[in-house]
Image 1 (tube, rainbow, N blue to C red):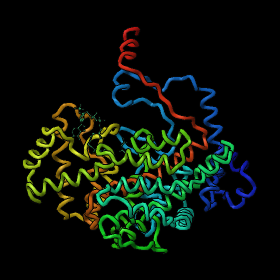
Image 2 (cartoon, rainbow, N blue to C red; image 1 turned 60 degrees about the horizontal axis):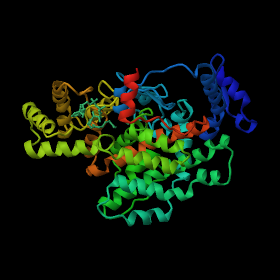
Image 3 (tube, rainbow, N blue to C red; image 1 turned 90 degrees about the vertical axis):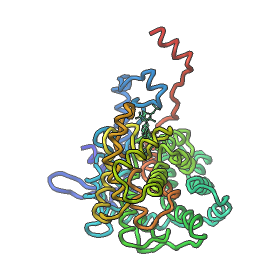
Image 4 (cartoon, rainbow, N blue to C red; image 1 turned 45 degrees about the vertical axis):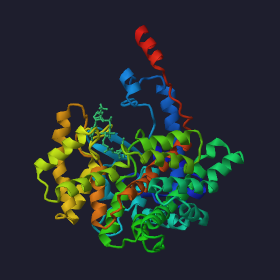
Length: 464
Ligand SMILES: CC(=O)SCCNC(=O)CCNC(=O)[C@H](O)C(C)(C)COP(=O)(O)OP(=O)(O)OC[C@H]1O[C@@H](n2cnc3c(N)ncnc32)[C@H](O)[C@@H]1OP(=O)(O)O
Ligand SMILES: O=C([O-])CC(=O)C(=O)O
């Protein structure tokens, strides 16, 4: 009913060609214009939020214990995030859809293949699974915005040769900020009810350019600066692999899947929260996404995929590919005893195996069943959880997304692990920037939780 009302209220220019009767009384958005489809959804969601606040604003969603305040705010439901929701046992759902469901429902580049991330972008933005035509129109829209200005290449070329690829990514994104449409609109006094529009424009411009930027970082850092042009016949995710210099069909499919599953993980993770927090000060999408990327670059978060590969390389160097389970156990214990974490295992919120791990393991079983690194990773699954349980303190002993992504990348020849987090970051843009558009459309305020000193906590506890 809400959708029907929203459609009837849509501006005549948007309404034309927008709807089609589907089955008995059902309506489906037909436009292939992502922005028009989004614009049509915003008024009803604004009303929904207003009603929620008015009718239930004083109700409690949870409490904050001393442990939570000093323990990274774990478990405090204190943030609005529309694009995805995590269940500790089941894992992530993007707008209500699990990863296997997305693999089934989202448009593909070829029959039986993996979803294209453009379809996921449509879903994250609008809440609707797109048709193939709608996803294709996103591909085209991003292609038209994909040209990276020359000064960004100059900024990248001027980096110290040892600059980590994630630092290069954040720097390149910041150098694009000069073109922010939101910053310009704000400066010229735009009414706040319209903010979402230039934020959408900036977000699409940035998402469109990220594969070219990431590929330039890759080619500069590892291939002597020999850049590869985009292909006009490839979609956004596959073009990233292509511009990095990889054309194998399996690699293109892997990249589409990789770019789809890393996109969003609700709002509290470091990269999403950092983007959201900085965006809440009305910093534009370039500034806020760059903040998210500097958080993703931490080894307990997105850099863990690099760390996993380095750790596995150590195992192989010390023990070889024919490592036994006993040798592997010894290696894991040695890691723990030296005061380090086992990368790729554990999670701040999940309490079961990450479905993004499972999805990549299924891909590996299908495409590379005899690959030694895949077999080693599969063995880790048998060995590590029991050891982490034995420590008695690790809340989730199972693997996360980062435990498996390096296997797929190595198999297709992307061997430079210090680049892996950049691939994660490109995908993460889809989620955090989609939410950024909604945050401005919903008029969310500046974020500012209360902090306390130890003395203040002691005082409150004593009074209680
Ligand atoms: C995309 C992502 O960001 S997914 C996560 C990627 N990060 C990694 O894979 C790094 C390895 N994992 C970890 O460090 C942690 O599991 C995190 C950072 C992901 C989550 O941290 P927390 O929420 O604090 O986990 P948890 O509550 O289980 O921690 C309890 C204790 O177990 C330890 N622990 C948790 N996971 C591990 C692990 N994989 N190896 C060794 N110790 C671990 C913690 O360091 C902590 O120790 P401490 O009490 O001595 O400080
Ligand atoms: O949710 C988290 O805390 C970390 C994570 O897996 C992600 O951001 O993808």
